[in-house]
Length: 148
Image (spheres, rainbow, N blue to C red):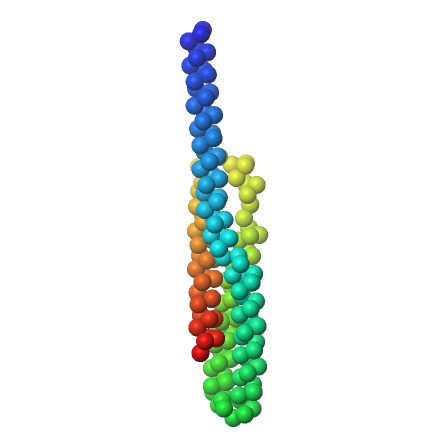
């Protein structure tokens, strides 16, 4: 019976340690997801609105250039098309960040098993990585256009 108690205690201890390790793995995976989020969020919150203002200013300047005869109707149309394309990119990147934030559910992690939680977080990491790529592309394109 003493031997059974020792084995039972050792089994319980291993079980608790494994559970702790599982929780650590889940927390680590969640931190990886949020590291990407924390990198992208300031761009959509602060940088994007500043770029939108610059695009508005560029758009206004185009009207003045057209009025002054420094820009043809075709050039004006091309510029407007480019501005519209960049605005869409910025908007889609921002929307994808908002959609991710609305869809992410950390409460789920407490209710599901470790393997399921790790799979969920891997999917969320892939989604967040796609949001980051979309954001960086929009940012690069907007900055390149505004430098022209």
